[in-house]
Amino acid sequence: MAPFLLRAEFNTFFFSSENSVELKTTQKMVLAALAFSGAAFAQTKAPEPDYTLSYNVGVVTDYRYRGISQSRLKPALQGGIDFAHKSGFYLGTWASTIKWIKDAGGGASVEWDIYGGYKGTAGPIGYDVGVLRYQYPSHDLSVSPNTTEIYGAGTYGPATLKYSHAVTNLFGFADTKGSGYLDLSATFDLGNGWSLAPHVGHQKVKNFSPASYTDYSVTVGKDFGNGFSASAALVGTDADDSVYFTPAGKFTGKSGLVLGAKYSF
Image (cartoon, rainbow, N blue to C red; front, top):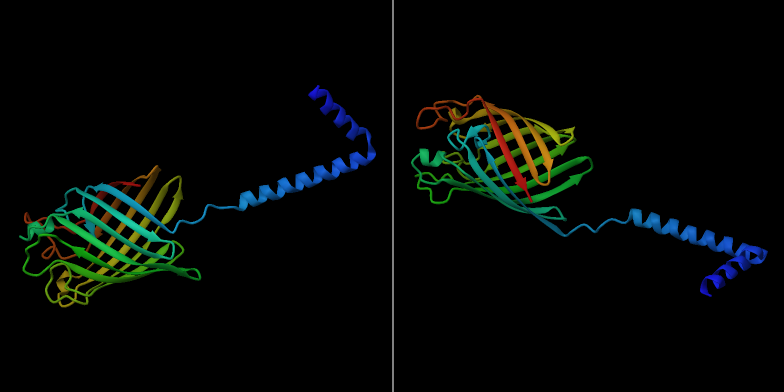
């Protein structure tokens, strides 16, 4: 009997002008409510997390830092952890295998970096200020290679200009506190996960001008999704090969192709 009762009630509404108006009014109210709730749902976003914690591991065919090989022109394993708070503050650590300190008779085979800072915006300009400590555990060089730099960067569109200032001796060079590195780079999104990043930088080594030099690179990157990415970089410098070389006499600032692969999670 239930289906019959429902049909009877529907027919009563249909043939009664008063109930017909009431039905149309009810339909409009329901449609309006649905439209409003749909719009509200579309505009609702998941709340921004207070912080993010990310990890990365990778391998490169040569660890180049500011154009100079840190791994004797050989492959290196790398990885890091990054903490970023929604306020703009961040902390991170990163490490890589190296060979240059062993080559200098210093023993250490790992570079361990610790950094922190603050990122924000001022109108169309993004900025980043912070401090970075380079540690070389177990080294026994007479002049410590451990280095601390403070840095500041500004980004406008795809371009970033950054300056890093050493507040200690620079990577084992004596009496080089106050050295600085100026870096101009850009990142262009080519679509479909591809990117192009040109770069030029100048390392000024205070009180030791033969160690000062300019480096340059062009990097093509590909994001494959699911945390996997790869890169190919053409790297070169005008550094002095009498300052930067391996025990076998190979120039560690020579032009070369560096390939890399990374997984972030």
